[in-house]
Length: 415
Image (cartoon, rainbow, N blue to C red; front, side):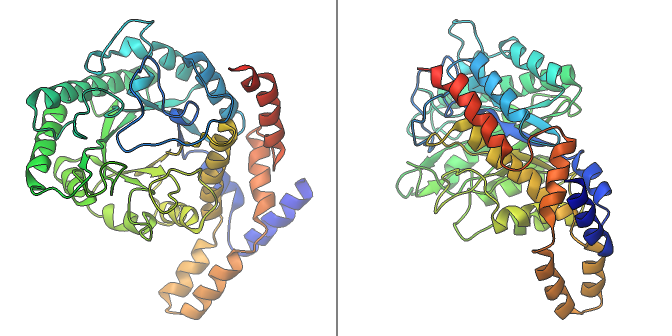
């Protein structure tokens, strides 16, 4: 393999690309794995059915049923994916030891096992309030509800989550990104779109009024086009959260599945980052709608990575994954998407950037197009394989054998 890598490395060097420098830079770019791929967004101690416009399809054997099983599955994924990783938790993954603790009462102690796990593995934690799958999601509304008691409950939940995130950041010495996605919306066309948006803005203001040290926690707000049961109007639209993030110094979260089917988030990065300091990405793959398919090596995935790398956004863009597929082996789903994200970043890092910038600056668009096409068939596979080998993870499709073994020895025994 070394000879193949050396030959490929020389091909890139002839184009002015330092592959070793690309490896070092990729080592510093964290990808936040999402815990909810392992259990179909079920969580623990949660009796309500999945709602809020979310749907998981499939019933492949082996779903994680306990916190221990879920952490073991995540460990398996960490062993198969190269590069720097984080873990993204939803609040419904609290561990309350069988006690009934409502969402507005959760405390850092309910995530002590997750903190210990993250410390041992030297990974950062990210967090999310869970404004779904709960009786207090009434008529499709939470923070924008006309009922003051409903809004109060979810405001308290948001405040509790930010306090937990602050503890994550402090204990792990690694800033936590807490993302606010609120599913509120209407199945049919509302007469008044303004009032619920005013209520949502006011509720968010009340949540963020509680002082949290930004050294330990940063807040992000996430838009959505529509969800199941909220097809006609989503209160938290892109325009709503773009404006809110700009005015209130919050991170803007862009989810790859939360826009029109022909709309892409890669093209939004250079515009958004002119006006907001940082962006959170939820990298997903929507098929005709926000269906959260496993991330594959699409043109859009490559374009997202290219925008991050070409403009040196890797310190301003936080990359998280967000998909859930219960129709295939969940460990494989996790691994495919996470490896593809890292692979796309490495592809972007070994572009002949200096050469491309030079011809574009000179107005030589013929050479620009020609070079961009030639890049597509450069010998990238040996570069990726070498990076995996250096990270001590399986090379090529060898990871699949590890997943199959884990399925036979562990997953198949879960009933």
